[in-house]
Length: 320
Image (cartoon, rainbow, N blue to C red):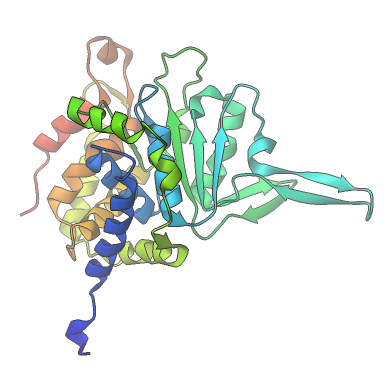
């Protein structure tokens, strides 16, 4: 076999992505764009916030990804009475050796599904901050590292629903990307009904990639080239949010970093060896809008963070 016969980084990365995507689509119908965004966050090392109304498939999408990878998976159902120790773990005294032993919580898994994150109190929500930002947790005065592959998928219902707590700006900024699934086409919904006549398709999902392949996908994403001109384009888009009309608080440099890494992942999925402006533009709204804090007058006037980012994309010069 000659050197030319070996698959390139982009070819092998695209193959891993395609296997996971195809496996998820056995269960989640008509959501190819959402699946690409989810996997872009996964490959780039970010975390995902899915926001939509109940019944649109948020939990199913998250579980389908977790089941597609041969890795440890935990699901945490957030409720108003949930405590931080229910997430992080707790030390329990053992009478036999008269010592405290730490029992890991569900956060010590490769993929963690945080269902209905906005139904828990702010105190419990904040337990995720350190884990999402630094892949570690502080328990009993000690720092404990999480898994090498650690990925959080959080779902939430709109803040206006009964019994919810809005996520603070600091936690929203920890999510690399936020998007909604929306409703599928009637023809696709009929297919969903047919698939579930006798059983649940998600019960038949089997792992299609190993933990090593999933980690390799993340490593290959880092090798995608992004030119200084494209990096400046990312920064120009993000910095424009800080002076945009109606924006009280613009996006931080963390948004620039997230958008760059997400664009690298999308380029890998498209089997491109470098990031193009189109990759950046495709993910800009999902990577930036949830980080903006809009002025009250702007919100009352119908101005949204998503519309603001779209207008910025139309005004910032695209590199040649």
